[in-house]
Length: 127
Image 1: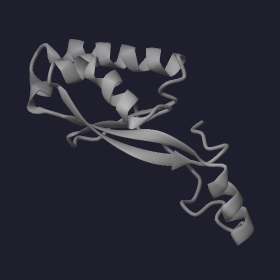
Image 2: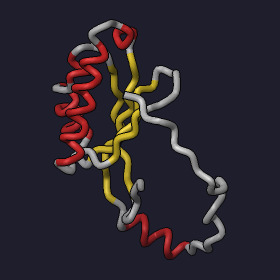
Image 3: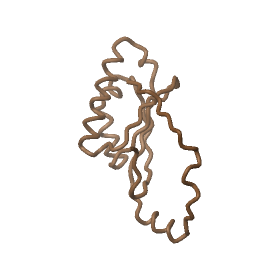
Image 4: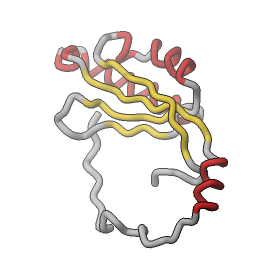
C-alpha cells in the first residue's frame, strides 16, 4: 500500500529563524499531551502471496481508526526497507497494544510493532 514519495520545494531549515524564549518552551511543554508512537516492521511473511490482501485489510482498519480519532497520524513507509510505517495513536500504550492485537497484519504475522509513549505539542499536525 505504498504511496508516492512526497516532494517539497521548501528548504530543510525553512522557518527556523523564529526566536523561541525559555518561557515559550515551558508553555509548550506544559500544554503537551501524551500519545503512543508505533513503529511497524515487515516480517518475511510480507513476501507471501496472501500478504497483499492482509496488508490491504490492515490499511482499511487504520483508516477506520483514523476516522474514529484513535489514529490521527498514519505514515506508511515508501522505501525498500523493512519498515512498514509509523503511526501516532491518541491512546495509551496499553490500549494500543490491545488495538494492535486485533490488527489483521499483526495476527497474520506480516507485521511486528514497537510501541513507545511520546508527547506532542498543541497545534502539531500533518497537512
